[in-house]
Length: 475
Ligand SMILES: Cc1cc2nc3c(=O)[nH]c(=O)nc-3n(C[C@H](O)[C@H](O)[C@H](O)COP(=O)(O)OP(=O)(O)OC[C@H]3O[C@@H](n4cnc5c(N)ncnc54)[C@H](O)[C@@H]3O)c2cc1C
Ligand SMILES: *[C@@H]1O[C@H](CO)[C@@H](O)[C@H](O)[C@H]1NC(C)=O
Ligand SMILES: *[C@@H]1O[C@H](CO)[C@@H](O)[C@H](O)[C@H]1NC(C)=O
Image (cartoon, rainbow, N blue to C red; front, top):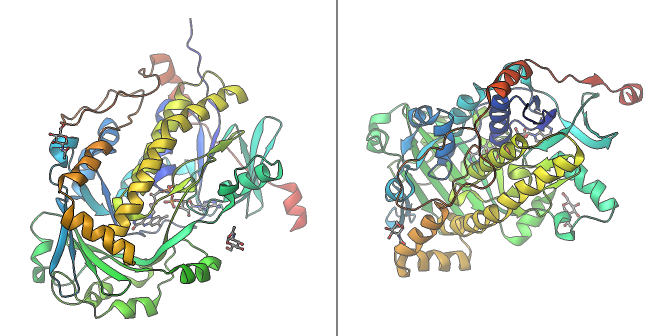
């Protein structure tokens, strides 16, 4: 008897790390997909990022672990300094390899992005496509783009980040029907404004931290609401982040902003941090000067956990449904875990009926919501520990660094390492670790020969778009 499985057409909005990971996975199981990205060209934006024990098994399953190791340095501790550059505390990551099975690797975001993008056939990713609106019609989902085209499919994935257009359009419809929880209408709350970049200093010999093969993570907490840091990555590069915590009033004032990871280099903010002392010697300005201006991005760091992740044929992943502060390095990890769990659920779908799709989305939500909630809370607490400057944040930090036994943090790491979702159709990656991972949720089964052949054929399929008559007339 032939196996029953679905090959729905999947539209993915947003080519961030979440959307790209989902594409890599769908490519393997022969589910036709197309990725739509608003940016007109791919730019190496962003700065320091880290991947650790809860996500590396997936890269190992995909055969990409060595590639990750090549672009990274292992990070053993997060060090915090005062403005006089005395070390005021440290978070020890060195047990991770033993307790979690993998090191914590630190790298520059553009390198990971490039590595993952290499696994997406170019014809499946279209740049310069900004999605304005989504609609469900005759058992299909339709997306409308700013360039006057539309495209339709069976499944729509909003992987379009914190300001997700897919989410806004979906929530608008749900709100009109009176089925959206009220809290989902509230705005994200802004914690920090920051500028980030990857610098190539002309004089690497000046900084021994750049040549010992360890990812030094050095963050300074200013005496006001500012913090700044440098992070060693391979190839004589240094990631930097400068950040300012916003007060309630300032945050309100910023609500009109168009918050994107755009390179609107803000000279005023760079200037303010130019003379700040770098924990490795010299001034922060030296690193700004050694970074192409157009690749320094200004970003607002915000947080919000949305309750509604799916409705009808639409589903959200990554920052579109849970925007976390960056302190625990969980934003990208959780976006990619969402992609894996969603792909697993689509893999075991029997057909593309609304009933089966709803079943898959329910299972995805069941496996992911509470896990991401835990990481959302941890990210909030860690961010305030690492760079928070309000009175309560200082208090938390001082308690965490000075009074709590070191083991309290390790307990929280141990807890986190229990959850390592993996790809359902590939053999499990099982690096030995002291902390036992909980069993994989959902059905696991290898790709059948029949399905592999079908996957090869499907992977040649193109989902095309159309000039939208109505919009074309309007224009
Ligand atoms: C350029 C960039 C640089 C970043 N740098 C850092 C960093 O240095 N450190 C850090 O911790 N995090 C950084 N992040 C955020 C981090 O990558 C995310 O928090 C995390 O990876 C979750 O990713 P995501 O795929 O859910 O969302 P995102 O990474 O935000 O990706 C969303 C994608 O959707 C696109 N998009 C948005 N709206 C639309 C629309 N209407 N139509 C079509 N496309 C749309 C965006 O252009 C973007 O490419 C960066 C994100 C980006 C996009
Ligand atoms: C959210 O922010 C927008 C501005 O971006 C503002 O118009 C709106 O009133 C805010 N909504 C809430 C609920 O605060
Ligand atoms: C973390 O887990 C490992 C393995 O179970 C254990 O040896 C270690 O003591 C734990 N650490 C803490 C602080 O609980």
